[in-house]
Length: 69
Image (tube, rainbow, N blue to C red; front, side):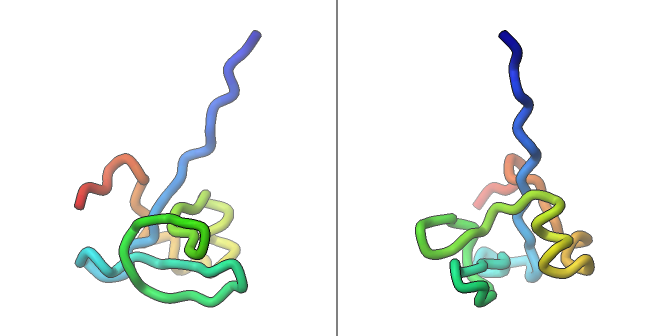
């Protein structure tokens, strides 16, 4: 038995307010809203996912556990 370490997840906080987070719909459409992830919007990303969207977004990455609203 061994433990698999989960990959760190990040929010992309583009504007410093509660609705300033990158949200990506299943169809790839991007918008800004809150950090709540659901069946429609993805708000938590791995480093590779962020850089695949746009490498410039990496500078706005915030580890999931550090965000409090």
